[in-house]
Figure 1 (spheres, rainbow, N blue to C red):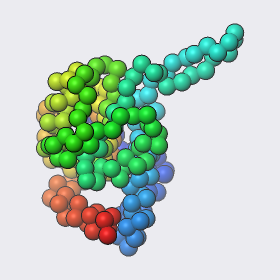
Figure 2 (cartoon, rainbow, N blue to C red):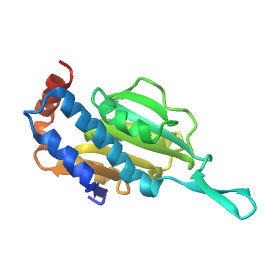
Figure 3 (cartoon, rainbow, N blue to C red):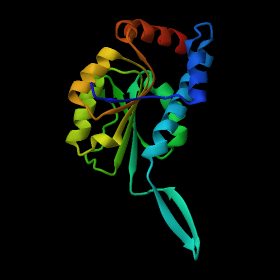
Figure 4 (cartoon, rainbow, N blue to C red):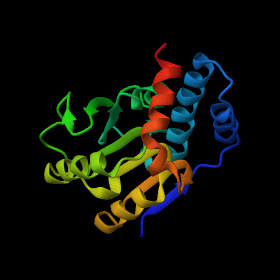
Length: 198
């Protein structure tokens, strides 16, 4: 496995991760925690991912703005990725949104992608069976792997190993690598459904 795994360690990420681990918190608090984690993980990604350009306003006065040459796409893995997206969209308000329900694309990915397209994929738990066909579609349409980032709350070691065999240069941001998450994935998703959708 040669994936680039980034464990987000910002103090606010640690705080909201702690809130999320407390099963005694009501669903509204846990949902807020997920939204905040989506925002702060996206912030960590954006620090070195966003491209800025210098614009001259008048003589001896310049400003730096996000480059208008790049297109940003947020891919939301349904049904739970949208909770992370609530926070992420506040940092990338002009990004195009693509909804994916496992292997079925709900809102179509643009047909023409290129080296100026940056893609952020959001899901609660990393799922290789969903990510691999999605990446294949992006690359086929012209996207560059180095411009694709995956953000999730937790990922399992076996899922990472499977992805690493195919996408060795893929970059993943998460709050935790869990050796048990693969076995617990279904029950954990059921827990989220029970807490968030009551």
